[in-house]
Structure formats: structure tokens, C-alpha cells
Length: 356
Image: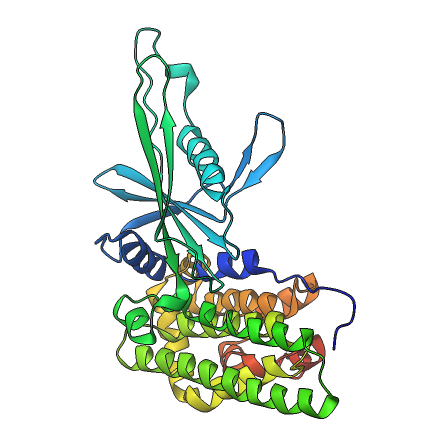
């Protein structure tokens, strides 16, 4: 089964997509991770993630955002990690300082005024099971002259320590797809074992059943969230899309049709009529900036722009001619594409729905 090449899992892209599904769900995640109580309509802003070090190299943080309450902004930094690295706390200090001084207005600094910078609240989300990972990372900074000792602490969040009920109670729906990451470790262990083809095939089937059970449980939680109005269908569909993408990244080498299987499970559990109604509700509520702009110019254009974004996640960047064709479709055609979004795997599939 080993082909000599180690596949690269694009966790950073998937994680960025998950934390950009909607403002409301991102705030729910911040509340759960940092033990806050922000309202779901709080003003949130995605901040710059790239910082230039003193040696001119670039540091890229995973997620940096601010939440504004009563005209006061607080910064939050979320870093995702697969391995337990002793030097990670040092990197977090580096990130924290650069986030703190980013956009500092040097031109307005007064000569006789003490400069104060505020570090962001930080957390590290560990994705792969490791019992040695502590609940928080610590480092002590001893300052010269003042002899002051500063305790630098960054808490950790280990996704495997919490069950589905916890994610549901905390409305951590955007993190549900991450629960399948640890299943990939068993397949990695299988590849390292010297077994006969018959044994490998048998174990792969067992793992497929196990993976399918976990994915089905996630999809059912999403369906329940729709029925209780914790999610709208637009949010649900984007979570499902990232779940499908992540499953493909993790398992496609051994389980080649896993993405299609996820899509089929989603279609069986999510009622198409609910999808159709919820898709329109998502546009009306305007949770995404692109959707909000679309609503201002008409529901039809907003729906078209949303479809283009969804197809980008499945097919990559669309040719400009296809974007123009989608934008030119009438609402009934757009609704048909929306209902069949999981079946569109190529431009030729898309052609079947587009009218000239």
C-alpha cells in the first residue's frame, strides 16, 4: 500500500475554511474555547495572519481575529497542532508579540508616554491523540533590571477528549469534522504492518465501517442542529463540504471513494426539501459577507455567488466563463444546482444544469 510518497494533508486550508463558515459559528467557537459569553451577533473581524520576523522570514498564524464590544477590540489567536512540540510555547510568544504590535501607529507615539502593547488571548488546538500533551503550556520569562518573573501560559484544547454531546452543547459545529482526524492514525499503522493482501483487505473494510460510523454520527448531529435551528442549511452544507474534503485528504489513498460516500450519506440524512428551504433562509439571514452583498443586489445574484463559492471548494477556481454563466442563470436553475451540489464533480457535470 505504501507508494513511496507521503501525502500532504492541507489542514491549514480546511481549518481556515471551517472558521470562516459564518460569523455566528465562529463566535460560538470563541465562546467555547476561551470561556467567553459573546452574543452571536457581536462584531468580529478576521485579522492579518502573516508577520515578518527580524530575519525577514515570514510567520503565518492559523487564525487571528478580533471581537469588538462597546468600541473595544480584543484579539484572539488560535493555532492548530498535530504533534507535541516542546518549542511550541516559544513560537506562541513570538506570534503573540507580533500580533500585539501589528498595526501599532508609531507616528502617534509620544516621547514621554509609556508604550503598552496587549497580547492576544491564545489557545492551541491539538488534532492528533497524544496522552503527553498537557492542559496548558508554560514558560517563565525573567526580566532584567526589575527581576520580575512573567509566567506565560497558553491553554490547549484536545479534540479527542470531548464527546459529541459536548460539541453540541457548546455549538462547536465547525469543529465536528476534525473528529475524524485520529481515525487516520489506524490506517497509518496498518500500512506499516507486514500483512497478506487478504488480511489488509479485511482490516480496511473494518476501518471503513468505523470511519463510516463516525461520519454518520457527525452528519446526524448536523441534521439535528438544523431541526433545532442551531444551524441553517447554508452553514450545514459548508461543514459537510469540509468534512468531505477532509475525509478525502485523510483516507482517499486507501479508501478511494470515501468523498463520494460522505456525500451520499449526507444526501440520505439531509432532506432535499430542507436543503432547498434552508438555502434560501441562509441567503435571507446574510451570514456571509458575499451573501450580504448579493442580497443588496437581488436574491438571485446572492444565490449565484454562494454557488460559485461552494463549487470553488469542490472543483477549484472556476473559469471566468463558467462564473459568468452561473451569474446569468434564473433563480429556478440556481435552485436546481443548489439541490444537486453534492453530485457535481466536474465542469461537465455542471454543464448539465447550466442553460446557455
